[in-house]
Every structure is written in C-alpha cells, then in structure tokens.
Image (cartoon, rainbow, N blue to C red):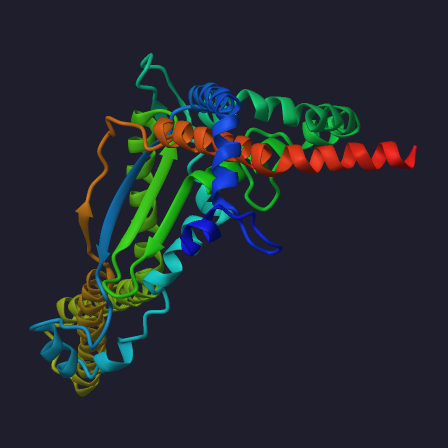
Length: 371
C-alpha cells in the first residue's frame, strides 16, 4: 500500500512524474500526428527535390618501389661496362599517400576540362567543363539562397567584364583561371575524391555525378590520368638519362664512322706504298679508329642500360575494381530523409506538448504582469 501511495502521490521538487508526461502526450496525440504528417510531406518534398547522384569507385594496387632494380643479364653487362647500377637506384618520393593531393590539384582538374562525356539520358556528347557548368542541377532552395549572391556577383561582374574578356583566350591556364574555370575546378574537387588504405596501399578513386554514364567515364579517365602522372614522375629521370645517353651514342657513332672512313680511304689510296711514313700514318689512323670504336661500344652498352632503366622505372598498376556504370543512385536516400523528417517533427511536437505550451503560457502571464 505504501508503494502504491508513493507512485500515485504528486511529484516533489526535482522529480519527474512519468504518468503526468504520458498524460500530456496522450492529450496532444492529435497535434503529434498532424506534425508527423507534415514532417512526412516535407520529407517527400525534400527527397524528390534533391537530384539523384551516382557514385563510381575504382581501386588500384600500385607497384611498391623498393630495393635494387633487377635487370637480369643486363647487370653483368653493366659490370663489364664499369657502370654501378646501385648508383642508378634512387628512392621513390612519390608515395601512394600523395595520390589524393595529386588528384585534388588544380592542374590535374584542368586536364579533365576537355574530356568528352556522353549523357545516358539523351546520348548527347559534351566536354566535362560544359557538363559541370550547365548540366548539374541543385535543389530549388539552393537557387533561392544563392539568388542574392548571384545578383551581387552580376553587379560586380559589370566592372570585371572587360578584364574577363581580355583573359578569355579559349585555352585553360592553371596558373591564372577565370571565375568560371575556378568554379568548375571547385565543383570537380567536391565530386572527385581519392583515398589510400595505409595498410594495403590500395588507392580508391570515387567520382560522383548526376549521370551514371558520365560518372563511370570520368572515373576511368581520372584513373588513367593518375597512372600517367605517376609514370611520368617515376620515369622522368630515367628518360632524361636516356636522352643524354642517346646523344652520347650518336656522337660516338658519328666519330667512329668518320675515323673508319678516313682509315679506309687512306689505305685504299696508299696500298702500293711501303714507306715508313705511310705505315706510321696508317697506325695512327688505325689507333684513332680503335679508340672511336671503344667509345662507341661503351656508349652502346650504356644506351641499352638506359633503355632498360626506363622500363624498370615504369610502374605497374593492378586494377582491383574497374569502373562500371551504376544502376542505382548512391544518394539521396529518400527513406532516410522521410524517416528523419517524421522523427524530427514528432520530437518537436512532443517537446511542444510537454514543455512548450507551459513555457509560452508563463511568458504570456509575465508579459501581462509587466503591462
């Protein structure tokens, strides 16, 4: 009996009467239902106002550079030529952890401007820059919120129109972008993402677009451009060494052929002579030809090693997950938006029923007392 009396007794200071709260909620159930219905309608409007987005992800397993280059039989050839292959091995400064920074760089983004994409809905073709600036849609409230800023930008643009016209040459300069190009770069940076798994060093590239075919095409292009960037970096020094060695080889070859020709002409012209001066000159020309041949032979070996070094420095990528055209949008999740709006509306209605009316009544009473 005492426990029942305590349960039905009025709550004291600092205590919460759950029965009273439940009674208030039950009394305001109609309001809560109305607010939940309004929240559901708002969720439907929001869900169908947000354009569909399609995300395509590819995964790359780059070759990890490490250790000394393995050139097989060319290693012994290098030793015979007196070349230390250990000195040709340099540390790889382009680690996979830098790949996201490369993808987000302005030069990398501007390279995508001219990539031609095809829309899935109407088979039209256009450059990526045109698609981003003209085809991407945003919710209606974004246009309403951005209207004052667009008006301000249009007004200030009147004073910069002459400067923009002077800068517009039809060629994108990453060093000096126009306002439209800068907006396109910013939009691409938001929609293209790269990440690296530090344990496995697998690189993930994700592109989000409002057209599934455009998303797949651009993802494949981003993957290939990144591979080309890394290959260009890793083989840069080897290719410069190859060009230098090629020049040395061409020069040594020319000198050898010239010395060989001089020796042959001299012997043909003086083959019937047996004077000492003839033999001395013949030996001198023969020694020059032998020296030129020795240099020519060494540069030929170095040229082969330089070519092998370029091949050795070229990285290999294993495409773990290629780009495919998605069949379902990645966002928005209309169910989650609907559930979230209904939950927020119901929570707001319950809070108003439990505390809002009482607080509003106290404020009205305080206002009347002051008057």
